[in-house]
Structure formats: structure tokens, C-alpha cells
Image (cartoon, rainbow, N blue to C red; front, side):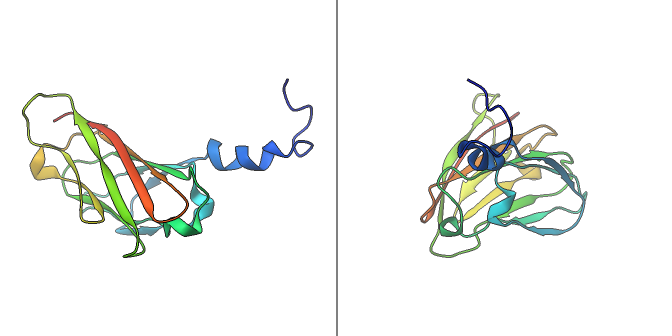
Length: 141
């Protein structure tokens, strides 16, 4: 059964963090907060973008952020805010045996232009609400 009116159901607050918005990032840096959960970000700065996640403990479990490569001419990075947080996971590649256009290691997700990054490569990062960020995504190579 659908909610008859927004605000009359306790689930509405949880829905706010899921629907999100779409933002094009054309600046060198962007720092996210827990309230940005559910948003999608397109990384378009030709010189590269560095995005910093909020601390995992500052977010509800299930907080998620999606990043899409909009310009493959430089490296983009998504960094953890807290050294206590870990970033783990893998990005699947369409081309078998090719170098990875997106790598996950040492607290950072790198959109690596020298590794075959392509416009449209993307990752989703999901937090556990404590100290972990989990990465999944797809890269052309």
C-alpha cells in the first residue's frame, strides 16, 4: 500500500536517503556529508576530481554514493575521510584480461585514465554505518 501523503508514514524519512539527486562535479575537490547519501555524481573535470566520503560512522548503514566517469582524460579519486575506515570491493571489467580502469586499494577508489578509464565507467559505494565502505562497479576495461 502506498503512503497516502508524504510525512504520514515513518518510512518516509528512510526513503529520503535512497532517492537522491544527480550532480555534475566540475571542481577539483568535493567533500560529501551523510546527508548526500543516495546521490549520484558525474566526475567531469578534465584535470581530475578528488571526492572525500564522510566517515562511515557518520552515516546510517546502507548509505550509498554513486560515481560516474564523465571525462576520462585525468585520474579521479574517491577517498575515505577517516583513516579508521576501510574501502573494499572490486570493479568488474567488460574486457577480459585488460588493465582495470577503476581500482580499489588503500582507502581510495581511483578512476585511472592510464588503466583504460572510459566515460560511463561507474562505481557505487555503500557504507556499513561503522567503519567500512564497500565498492561495486563496472569499467569498460
